[in-house]
Image (cartoon, rainbow, N blue to C red; front, top):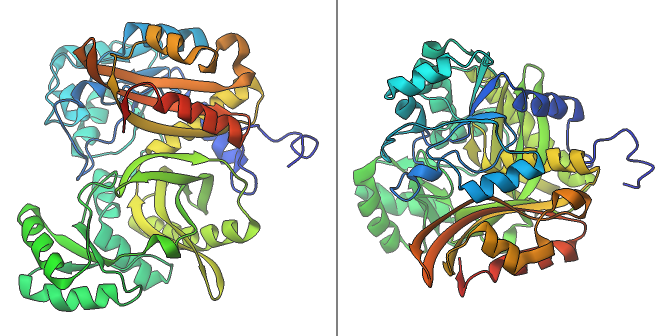
Amino acid sequence: MTDANRAGVPPWAQEGVTDVREASRFLVTLRRRDLLSLNCSDADCGYTLTVLQNRRRGRSLSVSDCTVAGGLPRADLHEYHRDLGIAPSRLYVPQNPSWRTPLPRCILDDPHLLERIRNDSALRSIFFFFKDRAAEDLQRRLGLEPVYCAPPAAVYERANDKLVFSEAARRLGFPAVSSEEIRERDEVAEAYRRASHPYGEGCILRGRRGAGGSGIRHAGSIREAERIWGSMHRRGAVLIQPYVPPSRILHNVCVSGIILQHGFAPLCVTEQLQKKMAFRGGRTIRAWSDEAVRAVHETMDGVARWLLDLGYVGAPVGIDGFLMRERGGLRFLALDPNIRVTGSMMAWALSAVLCEMSGTPFLWEFEWLRVVGRPLSMALLRQRLGPLLVDPRRLEEGGILPRDLSTLGIAPLAMSWISVLYLARSAAHLERLRVATHRLGFYTD
C-alpha cells in the first residue's frame, strides 16, 4: 500500500486483515485510565508455572495504565519505559505471591492489596487475559465491570479444550487438525495408524489443555507413541493428532481478533517463532495475499460460529494454525484454540500504539530470549546496543524495545531473561536488530 493509499488508515493496520474500527475501539479500551488489567494467562490449564517465572508474571510491558503483576519491574527499565511515555502509572503487586498459584488467586489471598485496589477511585472496569473462577470472584469482590472478558469462566474452560475444538470443527465443517482421546494403552496402535495416515510422518501426543507449546510430543512409530502415552497419561487425558510436517506448511501463523455478535473481527495475522514446538514469539513482516486472507476468514467464520454457540462473545481469541497449499488453493488449518488474550495480541497492541505515536508503519517482531553472559541491565543494553535501542527522541526510527528483563546470578556470569519488541523500517533493518540482540551473550536461546 502506498502512502497515498494509506491516507486515513492507521499506520498499525495490517493491509487486508485488520478490522480498523474494532481494533481502534480495543486499543482505546486497553489504554483507559479507569481499567485494571491483569496481563497474564497463568490461570489457563497447562500454563507452565515455575519459581523463576513467579515475579515476572504480568510484568512484560503492555499498553495499559494500571496493571497487576507478580513483581515490580526493574527500576532502570521502568524509567526507560516512562521516558518513552508507555510505562504504567499504577502497578499493583501481591505481597508474597506463590509460584504455584495463578495471579487472580494471589490477589484474593492478599487482603491489603484487595483493599488498595478497592480504594483506587479511578477504577471502573477490569480486563482479564483469561478468566477462571478465581478471576470471576475477584471481579465481584472488586465491583468492577468486565471489559473484553465478559464470558463466564466455565465458557473459557470449555472453549480452550482441544478435543472440544476438534469435535466442533468436524461438526461445523471448518478446517482443523483432528484430535481423538486415547484412554487405554491398547488403543494406541490403531489411533497411531489413523493419525499418521494423512501425512505419513507420525503423530503428535498432547494434553487436552496447554499453552505455549508445552506438553507436545512427536512420535514417529507405534512403539514410540506407546512409550510417550505411558509417560503422559498419569497427568491427565492424552490426545493424538496427525503430525503435519514442515514441508507441507507455507506459514505457521496465529490469527488474533475479537469475537463479536456478528462474527470475527481480525486484529492481525502473525507468523509464529518456534523452537522444538515451543512458542518463542511472532512477527508480521509482509502483506498477506488476498488468497491467504480469504483462507483465514473461511476458517475463522466457522470458529466464530462455534464460540458464539458456546456463549463466548465480546472477547479476544488467538487461533494458531497452518497456511497450507492444497489442490483447491490455500487453506488455513486451525491447530490450537487460544480462547483468551495471547502474547501475539499484546505485542500487536504495543506495536500499534508506538506506530501511532511515531506515525510510522513499522514491521515488528517480538520474542523471549535467555541470555548467558554478563548480567543484563539497561546500562549494559545502552552500551552494547547503543543507537539500536528505541529512542523517545527518534521514535520514528524504530529499534529494539526491551519489554521485561530479569537476571539470576552475578558478574561475570549470569542467566538473563529478556522480552523484546523489534520495530523495523524494513526486513533488512529487522534482521539487523535481531542479530544485535542475539549477540548480547556468549549463548542466547
